[in-house]
Length: 635
Ligand code: GAL
Image 1: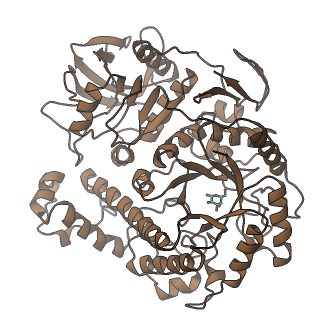
Image 2: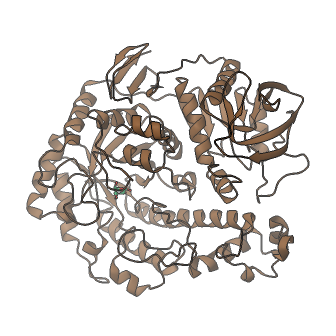
Image 3: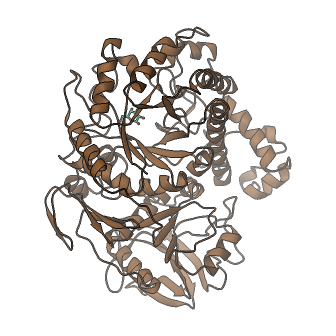
């Protein structure tokens, strides 16, 4: 397959006289894809039912005539002002009961039936008009579900829909809900589903089972909203449909949305994420301030490869300083190229830069593009041209199954955030810490969805923190031939957020380990391990007759192993994590090579990529790699 580049373009922002020239320059830069349309509703339908397609017809024609392929976005992330007059109650409501109003984007509630129908209506109009257009080669639904905290809404519409959802989930049996949630506690019992409210504005903590159910419901609403658009597009178009996911947005189950789409894509802003959500320490933020976290993007590449069942893109790639993080530096020269190649090394089919030209108006004036606002080249286009040339000259990337897999479960993230038990305890954070340790050890990783039961081909499978582990998954893990690493909190709750008692967690077949007590503690009070490293933030007391592979200086069993199953009951610091991974890898027969800080590798079927995320050259086993350097080596 030929890997390709693209950009995100807003023809409606620019005079029509420059569209052809823009398209010519895109094609000359070696771009293939141009995503358009996703925020253009007020231009397509300035007033209710008054449709203006001419400009979009011409823009698609202008791009297509230069050989560019269009990704057409449905505009439903930005309903126009008149829409909010037609449906005054369509806004989402936040946890404090405040209405999230008009004037930016994503101002709708997934549960509002009137808006749901409007989203179907505009999608049908667009699909009817462009479904057979030869230049429209892919579609994007909406834009970044969940960004700006927009999945969960406490609106009246959500409240009614939640009651219906519960009624279906519990087959109309309110006593079953009361039992499953433990509502005898604090006299929370209900007599009917119409009595069940939303889990906000309570005096103190709401019932965690109620909260978790509401998160699951909210995710299902996003899935249904997306599916309704996809079903309509499919009636008119053969082109693949994608959605552009975000970094560290976990409020809906991306695997479920992804199962309705051909392609998963995501929006990669490495410098924004470093400041905003990668959980980097101050020292790491300083060291990688112009390069981004060396693992955060890679984790998402692997996650979205799984969400797309192998087919995935970067729909938006940071091209220069962004406008939304606490600090917004320029990428180090070479990083735009490195980020692009790293995505390809992880199997991306396409990488599109956001955005073509920097906008001199409205919210994102301080967000760089491939062109400056005066249409001169910005640094990103120079690096994009270089990648385009390299893509033409180099052999294609041949993706292959990795040796190591981590299971990722959105439901577990909701369970952790429902009752974290201590500051800083998050499922995503735990997965990221494990992922980083695997990458420091030079491993190539696949992410697996939680419904995966076949682990053949993997030497090591990690299932940390998956709160609810169905019995058939426990059996599949216990029976597989990989070394399996579990914990902390793997199997800690049943499906309704109750703690299993007979036996206590984790309760895996033929694995003699029980969590008899657990505690969280301050991150500045680490519990040292014998031989180096420490438990931080969280520790389980393990009762086990199995071999102890990590022990604390205080004598506690930190990790135990029996057969091919290993359980670690603590959150470990980096040194402890490196030791844990080394023990599991040795048992799995995997050779490790500890990489220099900021250097990362990824293996494909035919070669190994090396990336230097540091701002200075680094000596490695494949020689000196320049700052922001990329090396490809046949294997
Ligand atoms: C993304 C979004 C784009 C743009 C970009 C700025 O989240 O999809 O429309 O706002 O961020 O970095």
